[in-house]
Length: 274
Image 1 (cartoon, rainbow, N blue to C red):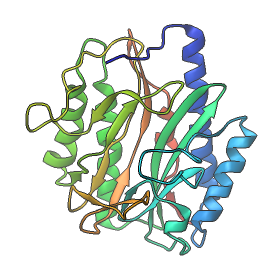
Image 2: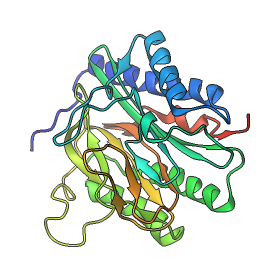
Image 3: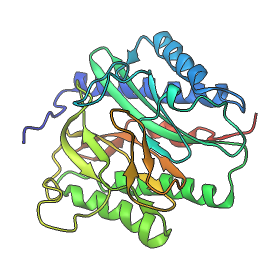
């Protein structure tokens, strides 16, 4: 496995600036979102905000085998949609009680930024509030374990221990984080759960090097840890239709510990009361 590492101060500044664009876009979204907004309107707002920041979406027209080009500037996933939601996949305006995951990927001066946050329209239900809190806390605990000389499994154990053992929710299987840098997806792949059999997660015991740049992203469901999706379509849903949340941070591993390049997301108001 070949890792792309950040080795110069200039590269670190480039990665940090791309991550800043993601945070600033989320900050602007928190002011823009309101009950009654449509996903199409949200996507246009993301595109306009990224343009003002001198960046652009790295998701728009992104391609993977067996799927059409991704149609939007951001991934917009409502309620039981875990990830990769599209504006065309949910055309109803946002209602009080809806939970919206917004995943933003940017390209800024040759560097990628990629982070997601979850928003609730109106005061969340008791269950939704606990799920959101579990997602944010698990991300924070996982990021703290991304230390040089440790192994990726340390991250997964911290995330899984909080979500499943302490909170009683489920981490979605088969989805995880990834390395990134000048490309959206690089090695390694980063699971949110510990492997259950040999070879299930080959990178689990990979020693974490200084300079590793990763996007880590717990995805939680109230019910089933499995997903369903339509053939040749992007959105992925919880298998049982239960509520989901998604949190993602960009992290640079330094000699002094993990540096969360998107730490500002935790300060954003995620309950939309307008």
